[in-house]
Figure 1 (spheres, rainbow over the protein chains, first blue to last red):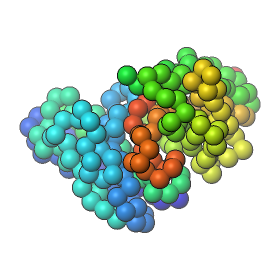
Figure 2 (cartoon, rainbow over the protein chains, first blue to last red):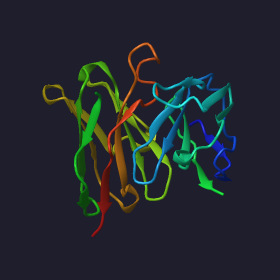
Figure 3 (cartoon, rainbow over the protein chains, first blue to last red):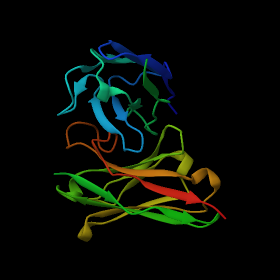
Length: 107
Length: 125
């Protein structure tokens, strides 16, 4: 199985900060990577697919980049609504494994 | 709009089975794969597999083979996930999710675009 490693596991930031989350795959997944946001008690929501394509309705402050084994999710200016946990997922090969998550907390 | 509405919380005894439903509406049910993902309390997301509602074909993660059965009823646009021989480590929230339109990915190998609200399964004697 492909292992997905996210870092950091927790991130403390302030409103307005630029935030970057990294996701590394144990082998190349081309650009078959998605990012999700999850708030407490809620289902995940899709932010980014194909590594860098913004899902419809997602604010443009979210962006994704990378290919192969290293990917990043960037929030250009953190907003109060962005405090949540973020997960990456590879869909290159089965099983479609998720990263362990990055919790973005208020500093 | 696309909606996936899951069945309510379940409490099961160890060794029992549970069947979770996922009622789809707002789109052509047979046109999109349904994925199942679970989340143990305080933990991350675990991909379980998919069902192709058109053909009934399935793909299960190795960890769940022999334990999970995914089915669908196209007449009532509902997908089901049944988990057998429940143990304490099966206590989790189970989510169904729908894939994107065709052309975005290769077959069932895709991300999840729309999610159900989740179903809490508790395993307790």
